[in-house]
Image (cartoon, rainbow, N blue to C red; front, side, top):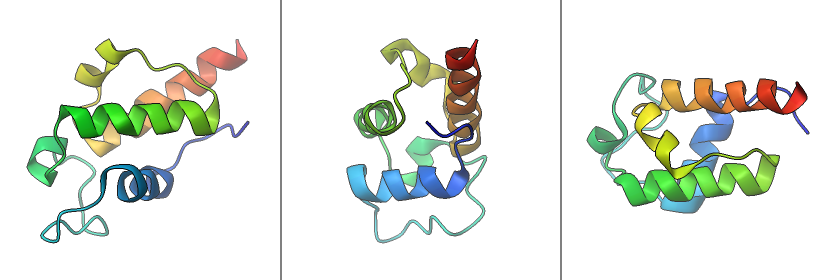
Length: 87
């Protein structure tokens, strides 16, 4: 298991699992832009979390989506799950 989830991994999973609106530039400065403003609804974020669970073996409860309104917060949350998994 990896010990750190990166912003690049987040973008790769978003592209693969939920797609990208043609108007969204995931290579831009999107760290603090809310997922909804990027064109990702709560179902897309839920699919993102399921992909993270499958790929990295961490558990992300559905209720955690509220704690991940932006890509930066999502990376932070996933990395916290890595820390918890090691304890």
